[in-house]
Image (cartoon, rainbow, N blue to C red; front, side, top):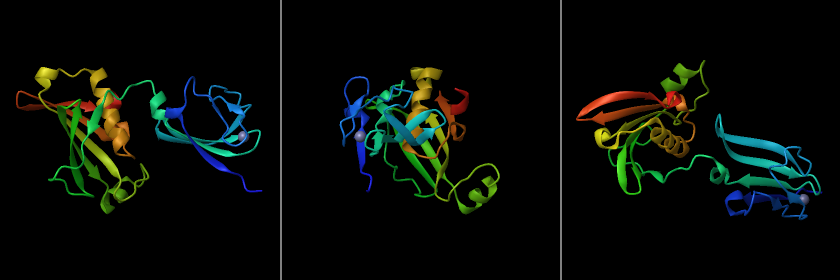
Length: 192
Ligand SMILES: [Zn+2]
């Protein structure tokens, strides 16, 4: 018999995240670590500490269930930080520029660089990189003197960038602030 496969969007699940198996109505609670009601088949991570989706199997009817929408459960709020589409001066596939804003207020810009053939070669021993994959992002925060960004303000910005450009890790994200026309290096997102 062919096993059925379903998708559950956790953002649409009320309460503590428990839901009924779409096939047999067995109540599945992701909080149940014993995995009595389900079995984890696969977990897909955004990065080292953020879950993107999970594939589980109902113990009762063996249906495969794809769980999505974990973002809604992540502790940190995304704080309405938005990363724009590529600006006109971007060179798609090489380097793209985007505006970072929060509730219509411009925070700064991010320049994203994408791996070229030679980068894939250069990184070979360190990391599995594919051509065209984002591998470096430089965030420049504008008017830093007015905003005076603190570490807890910077983390959600770095996170929004990481979320938008899949494949980036904290070590790839550099932060710079522009204060009174001068640029100061803040550091990498991994140091925040
Ligand atoms: Zn079931």
